[in-house]
Image (cartoon, rainbow, N blue to C red):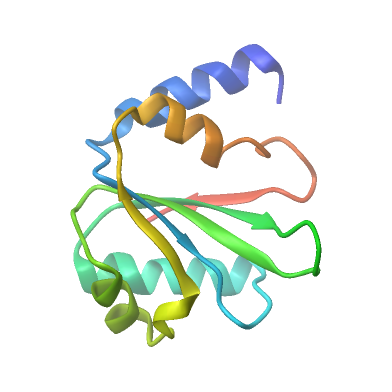
Length: 120
C-alpha cells in the first residue's frame, strides 16, 4: 500500500465509527487470520458492537497479538466473558483520546505481506 493510500485509509477508518476504546488481546495460543476473525466475530456478536482489528506478530517469541478498535465502552471482564479468555490475555482496555493516532498505530503494518486486518 502506498503511503498516500495508507494515510487516506487511516483517516477514513478513524472516521468510520465513533471508536470508544482500544484493546489488546494476547492469548496463550498462536493466532492465525482465520482464528482471529472467529474470535473477533464472537466478541462483536456478543457485545453487539463494531470492531476493527489487526493481527500483529510479536517480536520475540513467534506469537501474535490483536489490536482492536471498538465502538462501545466495555470492560476487560466483558471481553473475557465474550471469548472465554483468561483475563491475563487482555492486555489493556483504554479509552480513545485521539482516534487518528490510535488508528495509525493499529494499522502500522497494513500493506505488508504478513499483515491481516478485518472489521466485524
